[in-house]
Amino acid sequence: MTSLVPRPPYTDDELRALYPARLELQLVQILLRHGERSPVSARFQNAGLPAFWPYCSAVRQLKSAVLDRHTGQFSTLEWRRRLETFGPDDEPVLAAGPRGELDAVCDMGMLTDKGRETTFDLGTRLRALYVDRLRFLPPVLLDADALYLRATPIPRALDSVQETFAGLYPAHTRAPAFPAPAILTRAPGDETLFPNDGNCRRFAALSRAFAQRAADRWNATDEMAYLTKLYGKWMPEDGSPQQQQQQQQQQRVAVDSRPRLSGIMDTINSTLAHGPETRLPPEFYDARGREIVEKIGVEEWFAGYRESREYRMLGIGGLLGDVVGRMVGSAERSTADGEYEVARRLEAGAVRQGRGATPVRFGLSGCHDTTLAAVLASLGAYETGKWPPYTSHIAIEMFRKADGASSSRPTTTDSSPPQRGAATIPPIESSSSNAKPAAKPSWFGSLFSRSSSSSSAKPGSPPPGIGRKRSDELSAEEKAKLEQYYVRIRYNDEVVTVPGCRAPGKHLDGDESFCTLDAFKAIVDKFVPQNWKQQCRANVRGPAFPEKPEPAGY
Image (tube, rainbow, N blue to C red; front, side, top):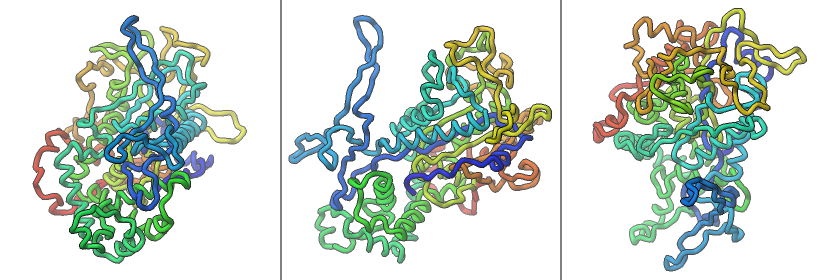
């Protein structure tokens, strides 16, 4: 419910089972929740909780690009940020921490020093798995052409992606002439990397309806009475005569109270993740109370994905459509695998001369708890029922059937010489080189080859491919491109299984967690929007709940 406690590294036996010799890892896409942060709103100051927290050292050493009009060149301006707020009579005052700290003060919802540490550590764990043990990624990075990096417009998500990348490839593992990597972002109105109720009116209506259903179910229960007993005396008054006349009601905790129950949970989780100077009274950490809050919060926020196809479609269908599209692009050997978005050079009909196109192998997308739970619930794989802790991640891995001659087991910790094969890559050039020789292929060019027709892409137009074409519309030739490919999902390093993949013929023989790419795409296609913005504007006042069950994951 708060900070993630990572599971121990995989044993050699676990690694062999997770990455069998008959499969070769081809594409990994990581969706990661940002690290620990300050609360998104100041709450419970009447309980002694400081409004501003002194846990954000990054604001002491900010850098910005500035243009010098005399030279026409950009340079870097170093600066530190102080936070200003309202004082008495609306006079401006400096925001201060619990001991009067003026620097390193966090804004609302800001990634803290602890959050930076845990996301960097996530990158370190990803490196240990995909670089050191599986040898899927190179130990030294010459460029980021094979990496797809993206974040939502919310700063803590971008900061978390940067920290995770820095843990995956610390400075000493990047070539001296390492070019700046591209990190993709979108305008808020176009964002689908989290459930965007602020820019999708129909989804906002659905969210309100499911939240109200949760309120109707829970507000008058014994569980809510227990929470009121714990937190009620700290619930703030709004000062209105009506509230003053209804003393008990103003202190009632409810799904839709002020603050909402989910807001109470947010503050509890944020305080638990940080130091003793920013803690609530002990009753907020009552074990039974936290369990009740989490259970109700999960139902309020995520039940819609399990029950309603439209909820899945408008909330997370666009993102999963993108994820599947990149997997299909990788299977097709086209720029739709993510190369289109991150390529340093992209011209109509152009293929990088002298070194071939660089397929994307690994993606990091910085997002939120609502993203991860929505993805899992929409695939029928939200097995824990627990709120995603800070720095949680989902790894969506695509494999292909290995050629008999090239397959081998991943690297283990025994004394035998390392083997090349299923999850390995060709050797890279020396890390002392600042650039690749013009006539030499990229560091894993031997794995793929792209024709100019499959690689060509034009700015402003989507890359060619069948990723967004619905499964039932694919020709036999197009379906054949998806054969021999499999998809497996791990959530916080634990394997989860999509229920629709358990049927015969829809998974790898002997392991239901490896869904065929064809079956996985067919499941996701059922809730990928055709025109998200148009569908967000349609039927805004229509019924919110489906007429008959629409279970997720099939």
